[in-house]
Length: 295
Image 1 (cartoon, rainbow, N blue to C red):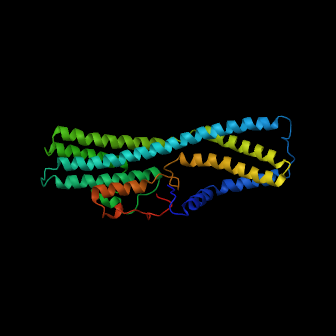
Image 2: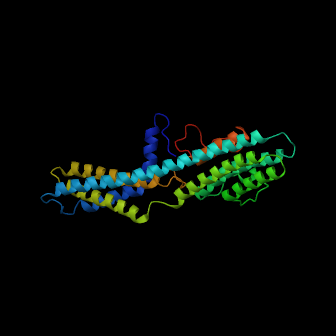
Image 3: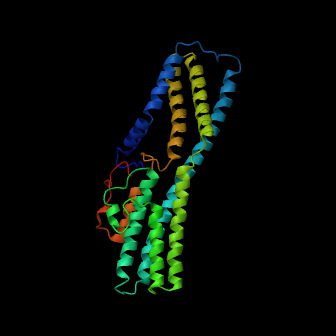
């Protein structure tokens, strides 16, 4: 997640975004260079009116697509908020059922450690990367290759064991399982966002519309009475439209292991601190407070 920090924050953010758009900017410059010597075919009557209508259409399509993309990003952020809330609820629920009996202590401790591992494992799976160092060591009782689903199933097994041993009553069991179910629901929502992107034909169509309008607008401006100013304005217009479309594409994938991700590791660090203490190694931020990018 990109953040603006300090006086130079906006410049750093702009630099990161431009670097992510570098190939698109190169493509714009290449297309513009190819169009400059070509005679302008759009200098016909009513061309300006047609271009205006095309610009309105392109703006509507790009704006609609970017709204959808931001909604996907915000939904993912909200679902991760649910993971944090229900992880804290798990910790509170375990504290509420703890009778101090010696036989309960190792199970409750394991469930807390497993809950933390679950959060880190979920973040790694959503990004398609290996878990960070030290995550699998949280619960040596579980297989090293256990998935997030396996870890939640392990939590359910431990709840059943507490109930079977008479350590908790049925009401406590229902309480703990309701939190478990809420976590599984949030995970399913996050997996849906990751696995079901905006349909490819629609994505291609929006990109084609943006490029078509950008090329047509540059062609018109290139043939204006002030060629140098027209070229400069045309280039700026092309970059703005192409960048707007590309940024929408980037943020519609909020768990793609890029700078446009939501800060999942930060969320996992918060969960670790809540359940295992602020001094735990995994609870320490992976970036400094003045970092421009949080992962």
